[in-house]
Length: 110
Length: 112
Image (tube, rainbow over all chains, first blue to last red):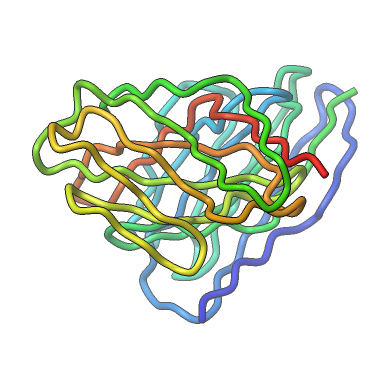
């Protein structure tokens, strides 16, 4: 069965600092990978998706970026965090009809 | 993606059936209806999906109207652990798989 790991689980960062969140997937090969963000009390917003190594598509303009250096590794980054980047970040993997989500990283930008 | 409309919140007594409605009047013929739920501070969990026939699995049943413009998720015997936000989603198929757009969902509170 597939497993999705995300770390760290929680993170508190000052405004203007860099960010790197990592997601790794086990139990599947060549997965479609996704980064979502959920602001407090809101639904999930798709940020990035990837269909393969080095292939990244962005759904919304922002100061975040994503990379996929390996088949089962997906990284979310920022050079300078904004207060509005606070939220719950979820990595997901999916094929065809379903998506499976990781445990998430709760980011607070202060 | 087809727009979905769900009630903001619902209560259900423990042990009773929870019926969560969803309207998706602009759904296209090849679009599936998906249901996910999110327990507080966890990632969303897949529940069930269907196209036009009613579906049942170990978690829930999905009833889709004949015109496919609405559906109902049924939790037959709700427990306190079913308290969560439930999302009804109709993603547009894309060549990379599904693009799931999660709205605010329905906050289900199962009461003792």
